[in-house]
Length: 247
Image (cartoon, rainbow, N blue to C red; front, top):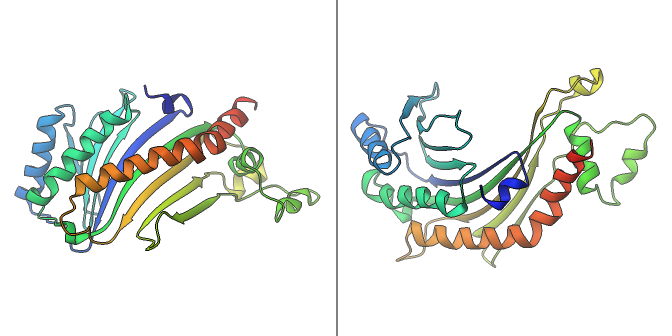
């Protein structure tokens, strides 16, 4: 398990490619694409169609780690839950990006956005929003609201997006997602559920002339890992893990 896996209950590395045009949905094209990926990862043997028409190929969930791949009308998603290391996950994503131009007829010109995303799930039975506010802080502008007599935090999901260069075509986004609702707070009954932290580096728009999906993805990964180590691990992930451990 990668070192990031020790910070949360589950850790995952995803690639998302959003396209401007509709992706092919023909039986032969979709099955041919999935069969080619399955040759590299034979354990990805569970194929099904969601009610909304998305196509999914995945490994069994029970083993504690899982590869998965989906084709939506205008998006291809590739993910690896609890990979042994980041390279193991990105090998899968690179294979998908290498195949997409030839098997799904997707050109770098057709790119609406390309993502490298790292996600972390923390299991916690309690008020998620209150815990996040305690672990990460609310800032002086709103912290006084927490001192209102009888107040309980009902929603606190910090999110920030920053541009990484002048054109704003490359961006980084940090988002915390909680799953506590007002009914649970009112009753004081909290089932164990996940607090999720997502950190994404995204490239918007058609790729530069001569650039490939794989080359761009490598750049996104390098930036994501650098920013994670500099601004997310010690500032967000460790405080959340420590706050949960003390409850």
